[in-house]
Image (cartoon, rainbow, N blue to C red; front, side, top):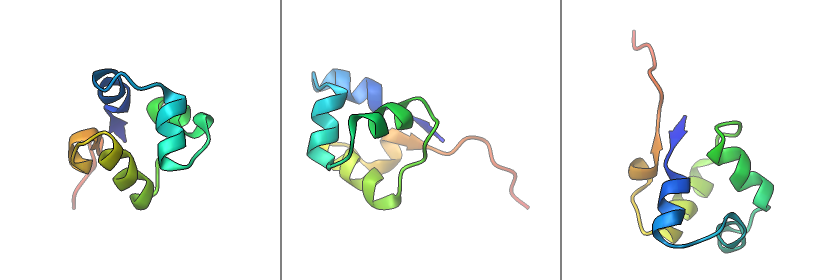
Length: 68
């Protein structure tokens, strides 16, 4: 899953630690999500989008998936 969290954080002048605090996760979780090593739960994705004043699908994007 691709994401634009880092870009949106920069637009809001927000650190990883500040975002983590607002969505009630560890900073390491935000680091892992931004690096693509961790896919957030639906609830966490909505919380991140809300804090960054975006729609969830504006921040998170599924990578190419095969549809049968």
